[in-house]
Image (cartoon, rainbow, N blue to C red; front, side, top):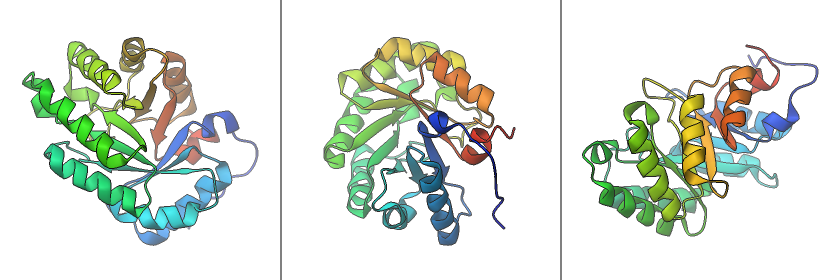
Length: 225
């Protein structure tokens, strides 16, 4: 049964949220229901697994909400050609935004050519749609975060993103601040992973986040911690 909320909610905060519906056991009925709620609360968009893109696009048709999906999700451990193929399929299914998980192992090895190659491949496959470079910051040092963000900016990615929400750690205020300082004001910073109360969400925005990804969106905007 869907929990119902009454009273006011933070509309400004809602407008910055990608309402995330990517749990492993998500059904089509759940996706439809959550997309309808996303329209009701006027979120920035919904983030769904690739298998649910077409359904989300159908439900959101006529609204201003974007359909976002993950590529190379959640490990990032696939080649750039496969990430490009996944992106093309996502676009064909109706995705507006692509959150691409970087090859974390390559970054740990100092192989930034692989990162450049996969950003370019995914951008080409996205055909002008928004591409977010997802770092999974819990595995990276500050120096690696800075390096990835600089390459993402040089390659004209639309956003850098902190986390998948499936790793051992999620967004932090410190990492968001570092990412914003690195990319400057022209590129978006998306914070995701472990955002489960309004106070933390606001701290991330103050640190420089311009988009938030969370599955507890409705609870957060109603200040239900």
